[in-house]
Each structure stands twice: as C-alpha cells, then as structure tokens.
Length: 224
Picture 1 (cartoon, rainbow, N blue to C red):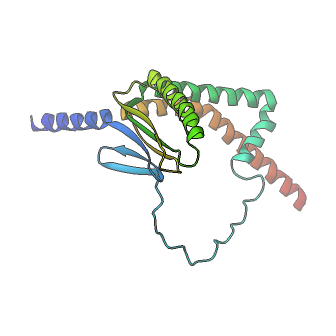
Picture 2 (picture 1 turned 45 degrees about the horizontal axis):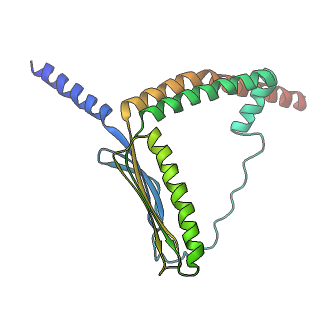
C-alpha cells in the first residue's frame, strides 16, 4: 500500500511538472531584456546592461585563430552535396525545412499571450506640428499592428497607449509581454522534430565518414 502511494505521488509530481507552463518574458524600459521562466527557475536570454559600469581596463581580447577551412558543419554539408548531388541535397534540405515548419506552426497554435503592455510617448517640444502628424501615424501603426497580433494570440491583460508630450524632445517606448506554452507540448514537438530530422543528420554523418575515408586514402597514396 505504501509503495502504491509513493508511486501515485511520483506520478502526480511528474504530471504537475509536465503540465506547468514555460514562460517567456520580454521587457523593454531603457534596456532590452528577455528571460525564460519555468516554475521558480529563470534562464535569462538577453540581460539588460547595468548602468554605471566602469569600463574594463583590460586590452582588447586576443583574436582567436579561425578554424581550418573545410571543418565543422560546412565540411559535412559539402561532403553530403558531393555524395547526393544537388537534387538530393536540396530534397534533404526541403524535408528538414518542412519538418521545422510543421513544428513551428504547432508551437504557435499552443502559445498563449498572457500579458501585453505597450506605451509610446512622443516628444513634441521642437516642432509641435510635425509631432502631431507623427502622433497620428504612430497611433495608426501601433493600434493596427496590435489588433492583428491579438487576433492571432488573444490576450486578456493587454494595453496600448500612445501619448504626445510637448514638453519633451525625446521619444520614449516601454514594452512588456509574457507568453506561455505547456512544457509537455514543447517536449513532444521537440521529440517529433528530432525524429523527423534524424535521417538528415544520418546522411550528414555518412557523408562525413565517407569524406574522411577518401582523405585518408589520398594521404596514404601521397606517402607512397
């Protein structure tokens, strides 16, 4: 009985972890920042620069030597191109692109926009007439763009505001958005994409191995 309770608790815990959403937060005040949040974990993608940082006294970083030509992914792609020909190579790329497109569409259908705040303040101290014209243009562009976005991703907590300040010369933009997607769905689509992309990566590996064998054969011929 105790073992069944422990198993049930473990299953409930795993289910809770898989159903918990992954959150993407994008913020722009004076600096741009973006982070991914999952439960209490945070993974910054782009961090806002810290104001007042003292410049580094160290010299410029040493330039790294460029990797030898014909190495890495480029070498694998060239070997695959030689092995399959142009048509076969383009067909493999097309299959990979179609798999990625299907995954992207599925992810977009599951994304939920939880919050969207946009505030634009235009400065009109220098030229009031030009600022008024710009205000009308910005209002039309901002509200129409946000309307299209909300048709694709309905959002309850949303706000868009455009102001005109005749006492300021500078324009100001403040933006915050938060979107979520279930972790279970994200993992499922990632595994599906990986499964569909396996043939392409296998072809790359075969092409690289074949290129290495040809290179070794040439070296052995040169030594003789």
